[in-house]
Amino acid sequence: MAATDKKISCNLTEGKAEELKKKLPVDEEIQDLAEFFKVFGDPTRIRILFLLKHGEYCVHDISNLVEMNQTAVSHQLKSLRQARLVKYRKDGKQVFYSLNDSHIDDILAIGLSHINE
Amino acid sequence: MAATDKKISCNLTEGKAEELKKKLPVDEEIQDLAEFFKVFGDPTRIRILFLLKHGEYCVHDISNLVEMNQTAVSHQLKSLRQARLVKYRKDGKQVFYSLNDSHIDDILAIGLSHINE
DNA sequence: TGTACATATGAGCAGTTGTGCATATGTAAA
DNA sequence: TTTACATATGCACAACTGCTCATATGTACA
Picture 1: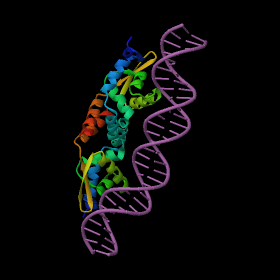
Picture 2 (picture 1 turned 90 degrees about the horizontal axis):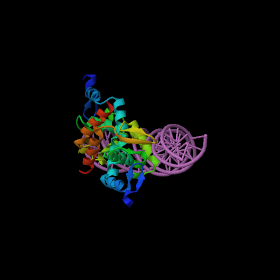
Picture 3 (picture 1 turned 90 degrees about the vertical axis):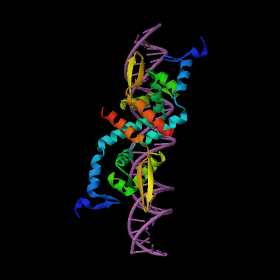
Picture 4 (picture 1 turned 135 degrees about the vertical axis):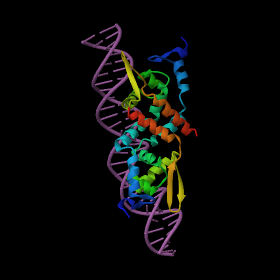
């Protein structure tokens, strides 16, 4: 019995295991994916994203609409910016935020359809 | 000037603000969505999901393939089960896990396309 | 320049999360 | 029934997260 045919667990030979592992995304990709989804894993950020589906808003507006204080909103907008989910435009004293990724709608929609099943 | 026309921040009247808030999902839905996406926000769980795209595997196999000890994998499988992302089938001493939601592929694909942009 | 406003940032803290250890439960074979 | 194996669970702990407070930065206007 060749080395790669050795059973290493329930139904897996070493050969099959190695083959399978090659089909998985590399570590860095996995890590980036997790970081990306983590951004969707907070109610405040989700609320902001749903809000921005309806247009661009300044920080003060966002803060009012999601009923969170300005500092908390600013922190979350930073996360969203770093994940490249929102973009911003400065106009005088104000900063207007809007969605930056066409996929956001899709992801939120899939999420909704899952939880409503 | 009517009460609902009062400017409450940058470009928002009270009336517009109330209208907008009605368009956002209710709190419970927002909360559930966040919980759902949180599950995708961990590298180990993402790895397990990618693995299960290729078939059903017992806990021992999964543990081998994602190179994590059995206990950690069991804990994560519990999260995935609770989020209804995986289902399981008992066969003797073993428990075989597989994907439970057709949307998983879609979500992972969108995530990948975002991080590779 | 000074003042007021809009937004961002850093530190601190409470709450949460992922992992590993020890162990429990469940099943099959001896 | 005893033993070995497969999986699950409770607890403890370190690491991380999101919020708040205080404050910094930046801009406009008097």
